[in-house]
Length: 482
Image (tube, rainbow, N blue to C red; front, side, top):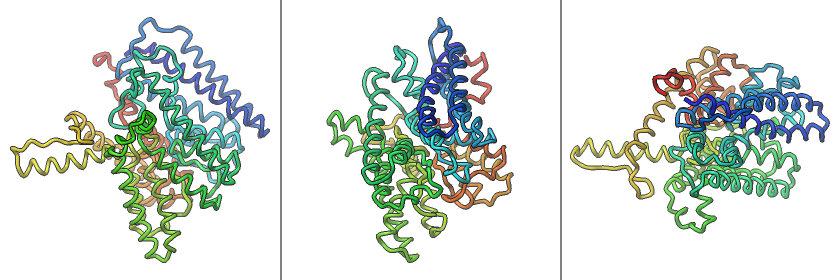
């Protein structure tokens, strides 16, 4: 393992985080909310740590797969640690574990919160809180690859470890150009949403931070009752549509740019994604109508909440914890599924669901006729057997991590719905769960142990499990496996 290069890479990432913190620091000056010192201390700490790490570039600059995973895992933990400092130093979140939980939730685009009164935060901290969603949505390391010169030879392992989905590749021949294309699309879509929300009457600050949270599919709101607080059907629909947009594989947007729209329409993951959304909206709407909700309201509420949960954003326009059992069960299923691979959303991913379903049917056919040769195909192309196997292993590991976490959280003595959905919401990067952690609840009453376990879940879910599991595995650090 190339320890010097790992340290050098992480140092550059921390320096980038320090630069990004200048934006909320400027906000502290504009709004005069007495948080400037907290941001200044954090920026100074990041600058000092980063400069020490990058003072001397290693002679050996190779980065291998294991190094890439360790860089990604350590970077996200350290970014969250330093990112929590403004909340803690300013005194607005006096418990550092709570501040760390809030920041991890931000960077991983989860949206779970320990805050009981979010509106009490000053605007600079509200901006930083939502900005972490936007930074973490596409990935800070992808951003670093986009701006760092001459990273082609060793950055692919880093990008593979961070970008969500079963596989990741280049859109164009140069990895740096690929990262720039991804961030270019990301920025344009974010700006379009800001303009649309502002044009619809939402205040500019609210439009910006809401768009950050939507783009990163994070879901941090700046009102205690989330999007419901704006009481605007127009804003709801704009946000709902953009949540779905950011839940689509960004490669498809690039294909549209290069005029390959027909290939986009044939994309099997996109069809499954939209089909699951449509079916879920109908089922939930019908269950709400049967309970006495007006049809128009039922479909509006259903469409927004389905968009929010399947993309793992976590915004809410109603207390869905009061919905019929069928509706809540559909939402729980959507929590597991998540958005498309290569999007800013979390969860298991639609592409993996497709492979799991098709491999299941293939095994049934082979059991009936052992001599038959069956393959798993997606987009009419055969999926390599190692990919099929890796998806099955990912699913099994995902469920195992969730089960272990539920046992840890259960030590707090919460009810089973709160315990189970809190873990599902965190490992799936969704935000709200049900019962005490529903859309009108929070995670403030959990113990320190449970909060740290849920922090691990959020990081593991955002980084597709392997980087976090490898970081705490003795095999990653043993010279025998170097």
